[in-house]
Image (cartoon, rainbow, N blue to C red; front, side):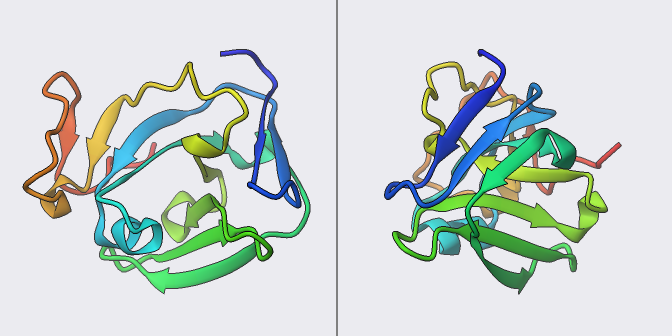
Length: 139
């Protein structure tokens, strides 16, 4: 992984730069991620909020997560590319970034599977990754 890392949406209206290494890399199997992505899970990483510079204006959609916290998803209002997520559980300290939106995603490897209680039974989870039925507790 080369720092800074860059990425953006399919149409180029939103670009971002990560100025530090990710805090955590994950596959999230929660129902909210399944609904939002149309896939059995999303792969992404958590960045410190102050290490993520966003150019352009994502549109945000809020839902109440299974945890009871508010989850927000940021996407490009022009092309619909899903880019960011955040939750009130982080206290504003972290923001999720979808790994598929990176210009170079070849370095990405998840560190854990989270919300596995919602994982689809036909998805083969990597047996070498730690599993969390819910999300890991933030530090």
